[in-house]
Image (cartoon, rainbow, N blue to C red; front, top):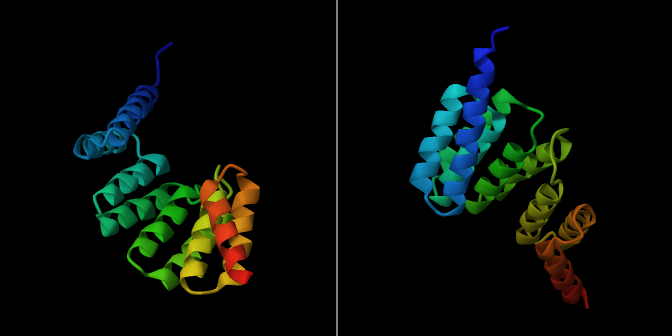
Length: 164
């Protein structure tokens, strides 16, 4: 019985992804980028594209980050992270109205472990647009998704204090 060469490529790609993430978390961004790209050459995944984009965002390379997220969506449109990340990158550029649809798409994505993030980010956009009542709703949804989300808790308290 022979082994599938695709299995070996996927295994190597996963290991490169893991190493890239470790370098990214240590702030070794150029090495992380190199490893994410090698992983993508072996086996393109939505996760690798998304995390490469995230690494670019650490360097303020917003358009490169967005492009990687768009590639991630092409690979797997069910994966929620790149939708949220695009919205976050647009928000960082003060492109608030453009960010909103991306957070809404993240909330509809079937494969997403942290729906608290698009709710929280949508709340941040709405708060910056002075739509406080709607922002409060999104912050409460974020907290309902993750009761340990300190940013959401802080935002809820801040907006409730503004009402009093």
